[in-house]
Length: 345
Image (cartoon, rainbow, N blue to C red; front, side, top):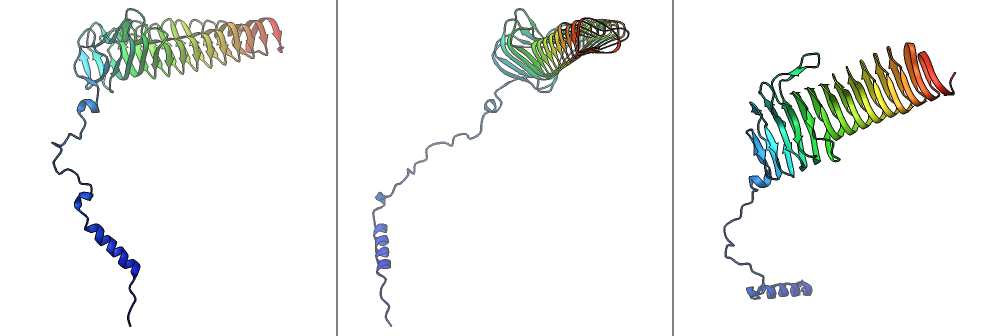
């Protein structure tokens, strides 16, 4: 039995055969000549880590750029690192800068006056200065942890740095409008703990003068044996204590706590949801308005305000609340001296 040819299959095979017989010049061909030596495929060290290492001190930064520590640094006197130009990022890289100078001298990181665009971050500064328990600071180490000399700084940020054992200031970058210190810890310094325009999430303890000193301060705690535990233009969610001065002082205080052994526990023009306590002074003092506040004192006035609303005062056997106008306030113990009372017994 004969089979009929498949005309479509035959035509397809004929066409394929015809194409295979075409000259090779009809097909695209690449050059067979090598293009040259192979180019490097790995990045250089400068491309991977475009920063300048610092392995010895003293060291002065004179060119803008990013710098980082590669090891712990120790000096026997004077400054460890000096920043002398704008546009510098200094990463302490988790390492420690320390000084054995005795008596104390120099600065761990000194910033020349008038500079801008400076960042210092992520490390430790350590000296051997101690407090004898009566507010006298002495011993080896640095005068200052991070400090500036000359005119105000601009666009400066210090973050994630701990400082201890300095004769004077821990971190002080001035109160220029754009200086910020955040998430830093300072302990045992003879003068200012932390000073900047904006301070966030910081702690400064055992300071000889003002532990936290700033314009806008939030979520921070300061403890001083001298002038002020925490000083701010505006303070929010803060805690201040002083053994011989004002615990917390601010123009405006919100959700704050202040305590003092001998002066105002908390002093503000306007205080809201605040607590003030003092052993021998006024617990909470508001020269303007106190709203929802609590003041307590052992031998002074518990709470004083020009206008007090929904506040509570306490003093055993003395003045609990003193105000010109009081609305809905209550004395737990003690007596009141109020000129105009509303919603009160």
